[in-house]
Image (cartoon, rainbow, N blue to C red; front, side, top):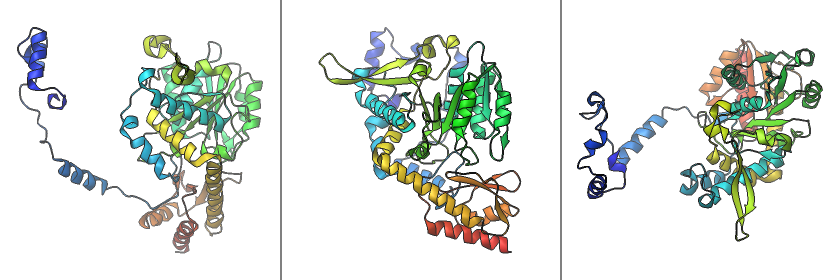
Length: 439
């Protein structure tokens, strides 16, 4: 790595002289001889920029890129305006690290502040943090916020994304607390079972809206039942859907969490994403991560600072309620740019078109003999069908350059459509499915 350090040979010799050494080897005098590298590593020699580019392009060519995507399940193919991709690529944002020195990090701090502000406007909540790693982590962190000495059990609906459930389970295992899964009925959280499971040791319930099966839950009624049991209500939401659906605040959520990938982040083979967390003022001090605030400097000019961060996350980890010490600043900047570019009306239009196209796809598929809708309830962008020729259908779509829905169970498919899908694309997909079923 020495060749990458911006220091000349003479400068390095001067530094050695200042500390009373003649050779760099002397710096490792205390390292056992058998640990020292005495000959070059057995790795390929370096390549030129052109060779690296050609090699990377060859690797990228092995990926299969689908022109039409009809799969969601946590990662959604929404349209991303070009400016949302351009600005985060600027080096002052792309290379910036955690803003410890506020006076040197005003641009990054402002971008986080604007992101937090827009998340609060979108969700109706009072305060948002600087984001955590992804939506599943956000849900697990929220559950940890709710536990206390007497209430240690976390309830999670079986209609929550399986990855989120497993992440919460991992957190509970690490903290020696219990996770209980509330069963589903007809694709939604079973209210009868939930009321029976809301025992005095329950700290919180995690609900997803829309849920993993695409169904819209009766979040307000569920929230009321949770609060009646004196537990806390955590609602995991699709951010774009909040442009047309009731906000977490309106349905009584104590904490809102969600995956921010749909806010301008490409699918990109699974990341990086960002976890959204927002809560009421009452629970602000329990939020993990950082909260950026706006203030004035000693000259009276507008300034941004890290106004709240839990120091236990850094220096007293054994007492910490969370060990999240970083933030997804670049992803949060991208999400903030997406929301600012789209604006309230743009996001509402994206949500409306997503809903309309998903319902069109569902109606056309269910006209075909051999396909039926699994759940009858209202949905947003995803729905589940039952098809005995599931594998043949998905294979045919794949050969046509269409990524079909996610296979579930033995004969089920979880379909998704967004505003990016044109009517011609949807009609083509339906015609391919029709051909398969006619054989």
